[in-house]
Image 1 (cartoon, one colour):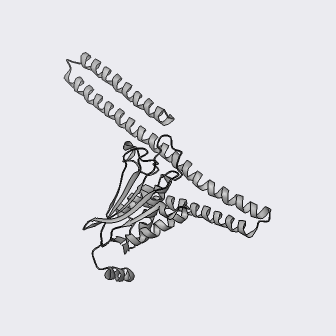
Image 2: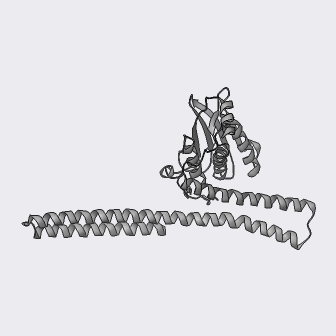
Image 3: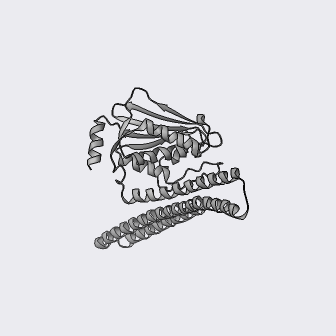
Length: 312
């Protein structure tokens, strides 16, 4: 049992004991004041208020303990995500400064430092984006344009293969032919959604990455982006929590996965801001996971929308 679980158990037990004591006192009060109606009514009302206060206090205390634990986990994760690439960049810079290296090694060092800088950039962007979405939930989707989700998904898949140094077959892209896969929204926000989903699937796939990204239109008025992996899976009890801020899935026996716990929160927030939704499904630990983003399909005049955006 973790320290947080012990703390929660302590306060829940304390609440139960206090409620029991209050009930005992109330029973004694009724027995003593049974013949005095006014005192009896006053005692029962006061008893009810005390019980309600104890329960509310305990509920809010447990919620605050959980929130503090989430914040601590987030700070630890962000600290790790920032320190690791900074230490790597510093090491390679010191190496370049202290001794001579050939052109091949120098190019390799530059590529590694650029990758670390990109990791830093992505981490900072995640934190900033989560802060904006927290303060202004409707801030996404402000720059309206017609977006081809199929083309955007292809671009994000190619970028993920390069970023994670994967074989092209590791991430399979499936696009429904003959269907309109256009949506109305902010292309940069939607790129963030697809990038987060694909990166998340790769990170939780384990050593053998097998990810399928499908863009389909299952109904006349909607477009789905579905990302399927064969990784560590998600325990049933965690499915409803994975889109919360700072929450990260930690299956039993699996090494902690790098990340800030903000990616899926950002995905859900952007999907909602575009009039859609995000949801997940998994058969359990070790059986992979499926993440789906559903967005309203655009069926209007793309030229009119482009003209309107330019005039704005």
